Length: 232
Length: 256
Ligand SMILES: Nc1ncnc2c1ncn2[C@@H]1O[C@H](COP(=O)(O)OP(=O)(O)OP(=O)(O)O)[C@@H](O)[C@H]1O
Ligand SMILES: [Mg+2]
Image: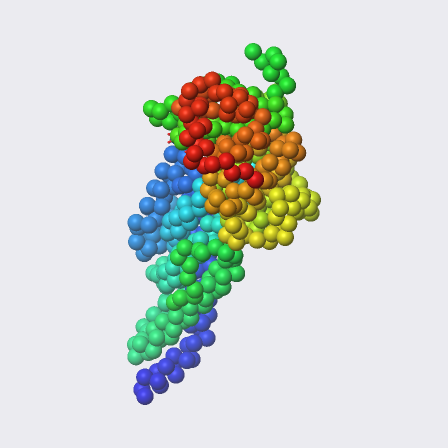
């Protein structure tokens, strides 16, 4: 009974919590875009880049997959100040988590690219298409389709990572929840239950959306390996 | 040495290719006139596919030269994509673009390589699909087509580029026996229409009836070449006779 009373008290903070959660969504969007673009590039370099470029891409991937997310956040937020640069927390978090995600996304895309029979690249080149044109019109459209299940996983993982940005003073939901807790400790439990619910919704809707995209772009007649429906 | 060969559409001269220690092609030369159909036969691992791929440099030859209508394909200065656009290639396992319907498979090249307008390319693709007997299958995806239909789409894809010649690498070897005929029929019609073709195949019926000349290759060299009648009835080389009798026994003489 007392607990529900507290939930009620959290209710007054709800508009602010929701507003803070929008910051998480913005960070999520930024890091996914950064991760997608760089991840695609890294995967392409690894597969088609020749020795030097593919090694470079692999080193990049290794670095950003090895360093803990929090350490990356601190490096990107506090690091630049050593050089007299003031970096905003949103930018630092987007870059740190975006680069990190790009390393994971590159693995997903590389696997997808390599799953495409190599004869298709050869057929495209035999038509006179340049390597870039073949990548754009033949390889990537298929790779992105194949990557959706893996990408869905990555989404579920980074959506939660956005809360880590509270450590670099970004006013996202976790930071706001912590402020509530610091002021009224007895509300902590109820507050974090609300935060948890928010992420259940984020994860569910993101995966559901990706499931829709996957079905929308499914290639007729083709059994996609590892295809999934919308899963939590 | 090029006098008297200037009229050749394709000139292949002393092609060498090595993979590691193994020299797969040990100096292969031949020429092809416009409208001619040449069939290449030979045991597995002899370098037939490698030879075809050296012609449009999908594989870079180590040595030797190739000319297409007097333009040196193997020159470093040549824009190889422009050359490839003029040489059709039909693969054993079709290599259709999985994510594209038949129509898109066929019009991709004209649009992206030749810069053709979409409506023009669409019209052309429909015509080429009809030419290989696939009118009505424009919207079918590769996974919805039989092997024979897929191979015909891939022939239409090559035709849509209006190539000067088409290279076929065992176009019926991946097909169930009952589907071979429909593909051979299309190829026979192409030959009749005057298309210039090089065909690697084990289909002796096709070779006998369609080829202007047969090249028998073994271990990276041309052992013997000549008109089918001569090769089949009076082979000069004992290996040719041996191979022909074995292959006829193995594959029979099916024909479209
Ligand atoms: N990319 C490659 N790397 C290494 N070796 C290769 C490569 N391609 C072909 N070879 C080798 O070269 C030899 C000739 O191969 P090729 O495919 O040209 O023969 P083929 O006459 O077409 O045989 P088949 O009738 O089986 O198709 C084979 O021994 C093959 O293993
Ligand atoms: Mg072969």
